[in-house]
Image (spheres, helix red, strand yellow):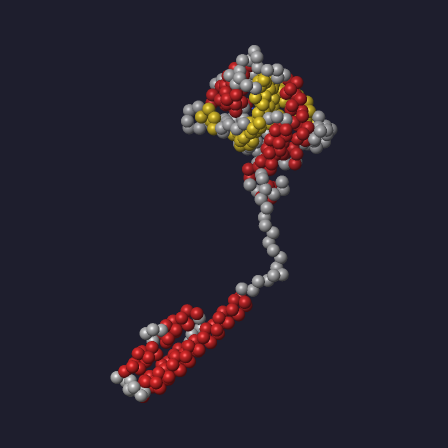
Length: 347
Ligand code: PHE
């Protein structure tokens, strides 16, 4: 059992040790550790309190008083160190996490739709106003739908019009045009009349250059009904071109050939760059070719499930990229897939 002198000495040593240790405390973590060591339940000062009942009865109050003084001294030193540390932390943060409110903000980058998509959406809008609905069909096609049912039998010389991507699976190809969608739609709607547009990407096995891509969009138009005539074709397509390029634009039809239309034609519009005088955009002709079209061939109507004696129709195919090129003076079709932000952000 310790006597009064020992405990008094012990209290002095405890206080010395604790205050010396506190000088090295400089963070919330080391402060917590200090508190556990010098004021925690198994700290030396707490041991002293446990010893008091074993001291001589007359000494107990004095030792108790002394111990309390040391304890509260350590506690108040703890509090003031804590405040110092918090203060230091705060001024450190104020210094290092300074926010310069005079800095101008960063402008958020706005995304936009690809110019081909914008053009497609405008085509949809115009044709929707004219009563056409969107009908989608697959990009991976069978030889049967892409060619046979469109009146292009195997070995027919017209197949040379479309250089085809074949797959390793016999008879499975990437569609070379949106026309196979005509057959899919007719199979779905016959014998009801249809008035649809068929948009989407088509694929051609081409040597790429400024005017040839291996993938591009097409929009197909198809109208089938009881009394559809060549005048409907002409009026509809002329109206479409005027809504797309402006009411002043003149169009003309030239005879052409497609196996799935008869008669077939190509529509030209007066050159929008030179208004018909002849320039390098229209190769001096004054006219720009804008779409292929024709009256749906009786064989194709039959293949689609319509009686060609009772039904007739017209079809057309146009290229959104080509339309965008003419409108904006884009001279290289490869820009559409090059993903160059400098090109894309212009539109
Ligand atoms: N499918 C034809 C092409 O890709 C375009 C076309 C569509 C022509 C419909 C006539 C009728 O060249």
